Length: 551
Image (cartoon, rainbow, N blue to C red; front, top):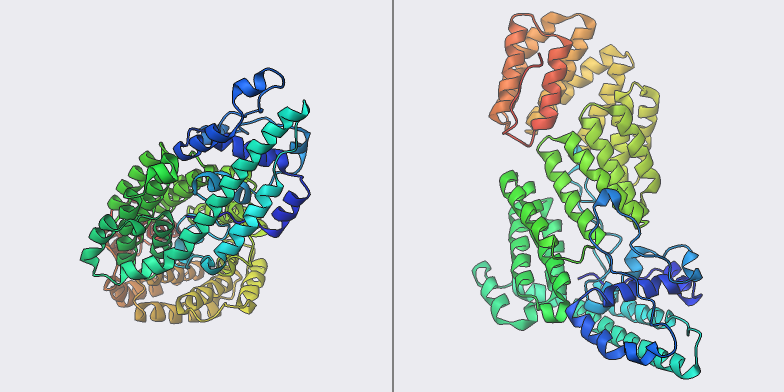
């Protein structure tokens, strides 16, 4: 359960009264949306139609936000007053669904599970920093103060009518402040409940959640899903177990207290995170099943566009791991559109980077360079520094693919000088691989040959079969450029068997055997090498993707 989290700029904007109309719009949208818990509140506190009909028009209520097809999504409401012409508030700060029924605005440091990971070689980066739960109560109090200061100004009319409306709004905001306090209290208790639950044997945890009401908490469910995300990069089995426990907690959430839409959002998110954990465990069929179920649950949710973006982001990650790079990039178009609509530039930048990497892996390096550069311009590197560094490395990779060797080398040198660039052996190997590819494309043949040979041995020694196979094919391309076809036969006879002995699936091994047979007959061509390399990049995580020679 994410909390109400206004930033300093948002609070100052509230204090100046610049976002009053926009805030009122969110309040009225949600309170008139049919949420069970909130509807009772507004029915009891707002002036009745009979009270206001005799004199002034009733409160101007905007129609609720509806689920609109993403590609035609437009603003669901018209401005309430001239004040709404002011710049729109940050959507993560002002979503009043967070106040009325506890769903909470999304923490700008977190996106879809795995959303702060890049597809492809950078895909093992961990998510960005966790929330600071110790400060949640203070932030909730600050949010409550901001809410009260944002009460809509009195409307023209007789004094007694203005008094009735003003008192009604006072009672509404008092209820919202009380709700924020409960949210903060629930979030404060969540880490302790999580520790208590995880200390139990795994076989007992389900019974504990079913029997004890204190474990049936939206905040605990959200924290379990965060833990599942964090575990995914190093222990997919733990990630699956935590996501399944999150689903169990979500199934016990009280719809009368949280609201039916909020509970369905959380159930959908829990199943989506289970799908992501299964993806990381290479259980693609199970991941597809979980994500389909998450999508069906979302149909009864709040229609929050950020929840839609989260789910689409996870589906794109699965498509990318299955080797469907073009389809993944196309799906991210909708995610980019959502973040554009809600003015979330950081998440938009992150999504543009992912889309660029997918297109680059599909053989479109120029588009990759353009999109990754756009994404880096929007990405807040202080929030996710490792993601920014990985994106710059990908940019250097695709710059070299475009033939911009000097720019690629400059970008790579900048990455090496960046804080946090060292310490990861696999990342160091990849940067050295890129530097060797730059040397090859720059015409430094002897240097490239020497470095490719050393890299091949190191990848084999560390058991990285797909990287070893791709480096071998890079060396084959170098020998084709130099006309040294005898060296290609030597590679196929002496070094390829060591690569085939590594952990690569049968279809990938069959593609490499095709190369081996062509080398034995002296029929290796640049097109064959290019096709096999492209296949390995697509199929490295998907053993069901078969290799077929181009016609």
